[in-house]
Length: 364
Ligand SMILES: *Cc1c(COP(=O)(O)O)cnc(C)c1O
Image (cartoon, protein in one colour):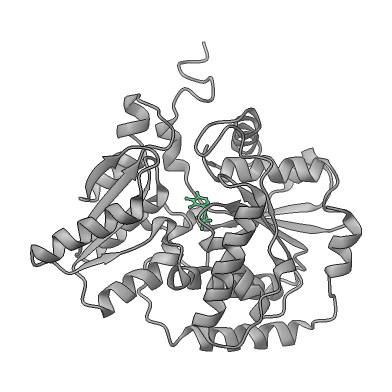
């Protein structure tokens, strides 16, 4: 993407006072939706000065959504605050959801259900074909079980929505009150969590006098980015938002985000217009496929662990970082001064990939 494009989209006009007042309006709009408190919010916004120095270019920051608190944290917690409240409002006693074997969403959902005293059924799809025990039983899968969820496996390519519907029907017949959460918690209800995050980060930055030029994160089932797009539109922010894809090709990813952002804006009901140009995904860092490691991801995860003491994951945030690092090195951000990476969590999945980093064993 040419740099002038980035710069021409920026609008330095908006005063801090106007930003804060738009944030307040957005809080009021969000307050009409039921929400349960599950996360430690607001999450910290921290500089990554060692990394910035090594890479050159803009000052890099990290928004610590890996520190949302619930069951080792992650981005699904913000979505679950709205989804679980909706489940409670509907009188549900059992949650059903689905994801890949090492799904962070499944783990956070299992924890949320435990905290709220609900049963939880998790259907895991084998998207990688890995048959080692670490991948299939450790990391997130171990934590799903620790939280007391009923966990079952399906083959790759299974129609997971149909599987969830079948299970819901069966549970209904058994006298339960099931509530189905889509993969990644990505629907307009879950996306409200990231509408709220857009407000949170804008307030946080404004309060410390920081002008954020760009905001980068890993994008998958699209709820995170769709929520951010909607929230940033609501507060008329000029932040350059960029999703780094982990599964779908660019056109498909952007369409998914755009569709969900429009539905989220409608659901929020404040007449926000979503501009298609605000939806940008770079899907050059997926590698051979979802959940399959790449060299760039491995280097990025090691670099951040060794320069910033931060843990990222092989499936999402590591590939997102690989994208960020490459784009910084390639001058993508032009003369931008401050770029924030949204850390969406996921380090529990590291234990599902113990041999990926060529560090299996002792140094000496
Ligand atoms: C789910 C997930 C994402 C992607 O978020 P979506 O809302 O599904 O696009 C990114 N990072 C981590 C660690 C995740 O678990």
